[in-house]
Length: 174
Image 1 (cartoon, one colour):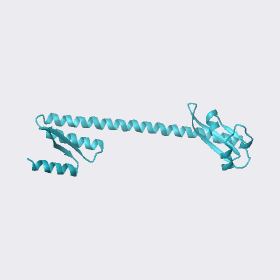
Image 2 (cartoon, one colour):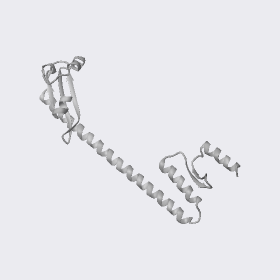
Image 3 (cartoon, one colour):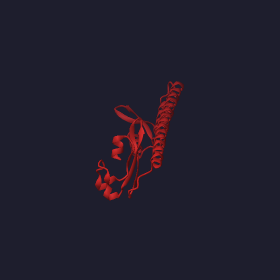
Image 4 (cartoon, one colour):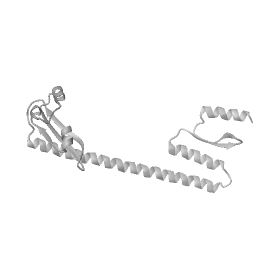
């Protein structure tokens, strides 16, 4: 496979042990492969893989068999490219969907602000709810700093236990 990748061309070794360029004798002794065929998977003259076939006996592949494997290698490259392109389109579609969600959420928050110019709580509640949904979070909270203390002001989702106990403690200190 290394020779195929380096040469960027099909290599057919009718008898690997008779081929001076084939130096991986240890692997050959383990696999017992004698006849080998390697066909590169090429995209833009770059090797992205290799179709490798071997026989344990010295029995060269016919020209027709080499052509067949070469054709399959070309088809594999097309399939790989198609999947890559599909994945890129899916990623772009997801990015656009997420962008649209963010724009819609921003618009929703701005609507609440415009409807409640004198009320802060509805705006904060929409912000935590929308943030939690868009980010896939179990919960979201807004704390406001007043009198050098943080106060739980808006919550979306269940209030975590440690926050509930802080909230109860703060209520007891009033």
